[in-house]
Image 1 (cartoon, rainbow, N blue to C red):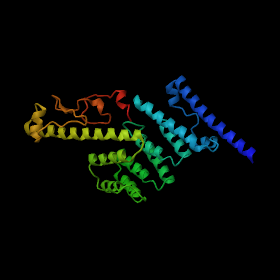
Image 2 (image 1 turned 90 degrees about the vertical axis):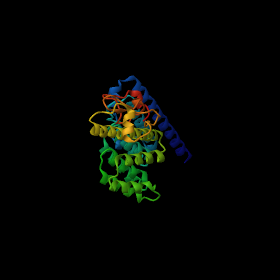
Image 3 (image 1 turned 90 degrees about the horizontal axis):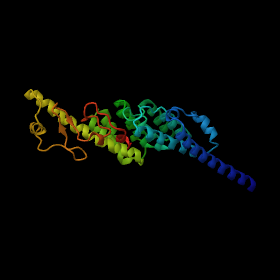
Image 4 (image 1 turned 120 degrees about the vertical axis):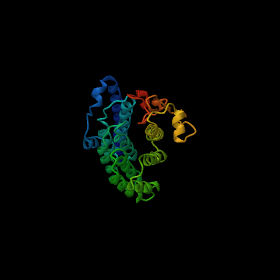
Length: 306
């Protein structure tokens, strides 16, 4: 019996050392081979094959693939690469090896679905989260993630409401999930609902990357809402007077405002001679869609925090 136990311990130690060595070799290979080739190839892409090859160490191998998924997304996001073709397979392998790794579903639903700053594959994100719900039916966050994708990326209010409603019935679900279900059913305003979604994400996630993304989205939402309000003021001014406001002061007086609105960094918005309301430092708001100069393209460093 002792001899068999000793053999098992030795075999387990060898397996761990082999996995560590494989990870080191893979990292070294990433440095030596052309990046474009590595980015488009998974030498083993079948979760079933990888699961069999893990020899019972599913959790450990899942952690390796999870780390690879985060590194893959982070490197491509940082340098504004447009192709995330391996993100979905890496996440699917990770979660099939460890179906209870909830952070992978959170991460996947946030970054796999995004069409603007991610893989732009909301349908695969939905498949991933539904797999998570199947294996973790009592985790309310997964229903929240599902509703988030339906609302933010697909504008499918009915499906979002259904997802939030299902989540609200899970034991110990956060009360705001019920509120979100009601707002979806009523087709609440874009900014109000988006702010609630990102605020909920920021307050409840423990993942630093997702929390940072939520924080930056909240900043961008404020910019978008401010600029939209001021730009509407420019439009109404033109309809009344037949010309553009000569200055921000004239615009504010016409709108009944006594001070220039400022962005989240405290910088006042500016009004161009062409009647556009813009932010002073667009690089500081990676997810903003309003108030950007015509033809503006954010540099890679603007995407460094995701």
